[in-house]
Image: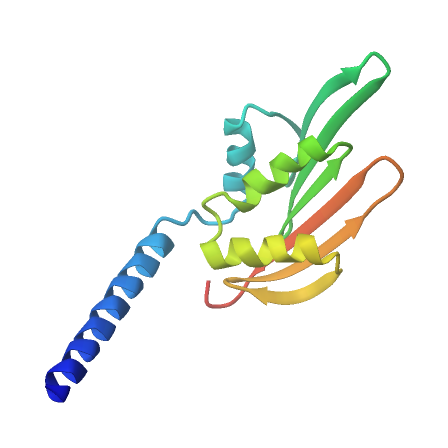
Length: 160
């Protein structure tokens, strides 16, 4: 009886590992590459209008009147360098934080990467060169009066 119980546990363990591995592989197969073009396309599909500053820099802007005297807005700046993709969010209202959430939940990132990126935001730490999944990430936050600026820089690691 003990032998059958041990064999049953071993089979359940192996089968659950196979299913977990398969789910991880499927999730990885569904990821879109984090490229300048894909990030720009992502925000265009969200019906934000782009302003091309130059071939490697695009700005998106969204805003709305809160009341007759107050205008809330979000500026999203996407830059492409030879080494990395940098995405900067300039937010004047908590509602605009939705764009950060949408970006981090996009199919550019695996679930664990998304969780770690949200962890950076919630930690209030400045980060340089932290390994998060397939990327080396720099993260900076500034909070000037009436705004919040979040800057993510993603450098693919060699095994991406």
